[in-house]
Image (cartoon, each protein chain N blue to C red):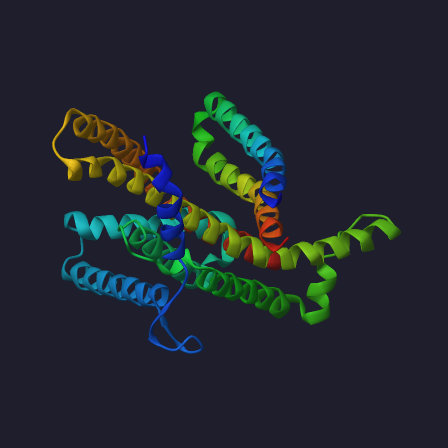
Length: 266
Length: 63
């Protein structure tokens, strides 16, 4: 099994391919493979939604798989994400949360294409998304109570004197921690998924390479082992499809929860 | 060393998510009609537990 000796070098090569490199422009100001993929994903999303609008307007009753499929996803985002979480004010926040949900969803799904580096696979994009969400819920809170009022509303009611200030400090700390956890959760899940899928793809390709030395019995056992890795890869691919949808759901659900926490009455 | 520390730290988060999943599945079995609501709560709870593991990941990268 000398194939396993080649694995670390190949995996290193794989990990190096995840470092952002500018395709256009310089290191300081340019478009990396990640942002290019992000633009492509957004373009695809816009095209899908424009076709959806046109087809939906064509008839009163939704017809066909495409229109019904997109409507199902939007309905899911509206019902499970926004209405259940936010209650009466859902209509105000629906556009924001739906935008985040669809942006992450299309990026995650594009990441399942082999060799494609989606926007959510890099820290920059996920951190920007988390920052947008963070600013949005702080804005909602400040708009409701005013700057000082929002800061003070983090202090718990009905807790005796020294403890409530201690809890207040912890609450402020955890509010800023939300920014980091939102960004890192999405990034880690996507990045780890890409690395694992890549590793199994490398294993499958290494064992099939025995055919290069000639068609022998050893080459056929190599093909058998390679098929085994391929089956594992398919299973992991299916899990990653689930993770792609779940992570988009989790990110937008947490954004909705944070907005709800900022908005709720004491 | 950082990797080992991260591994130890993740034990807690793993147990936490496991307990959350246990609670969610048992209550779904008892009361299937609140499944949708329970699933949302479960995802939320595991997201909060996961945050601890993620902080560990960041710290292991920094250190």
